[in-house]
Length: 115
Length: 114
Image 1 (cartoon, rainbow over the protein chains, first blue to last red):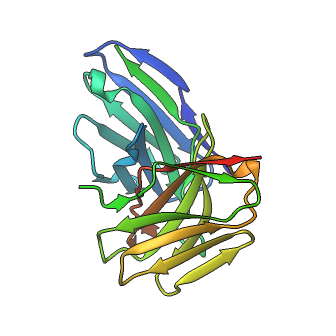
Image 2 (image 1 turned 90 degrees about the horizontal axis):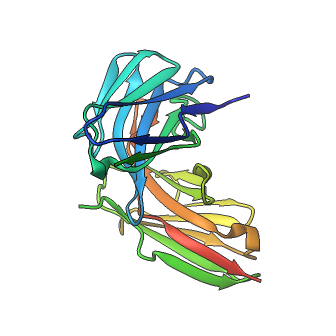
């Protein structure tokens, strides 16, 4: 069953705490993404990863870093979380080859609240 | 600035009606265009997509039209149904070796009333 799995689904943190959001996919997709969704802003790209240890900044990378040590896992890290990082975070992956190369498969999202 | 822009934050249509959702983009290097559908508290899923070598693609009730010179693409939905009620996100990007760094619009919330 093709799937992108995000953990946790809901998370509450205090300002200044470190946050780790995890994402896994079982489709052997090369490319993985982290987006955040805020009302009125749609999905904003934070980071894109083209393969293990091959990561590139998206449109809003400030305050975030990522780690991809295995093709199937892509982590988003917030060092010292800020209240304006309260958002819904979506992980996605895409095949990179074939007729549906560009199709994004999304996880169910993590709703992060920073108090 | 917003590279991909949807002009209407929300739209309402009667069941059975035809509707058009619009999307404008800035980067003329973009060569892949897509519409995603999102239900509340769910993740976005691909509805229909098109590459820049065609100007139209149809899939059942859904058709995407691409106007590259105008940097504009649209989604036409015919015979709208209550289950079409959702947020529609347009996305565009440049295919780079297989993957595309997709940039999304703000979304249009569609309500189909019965």
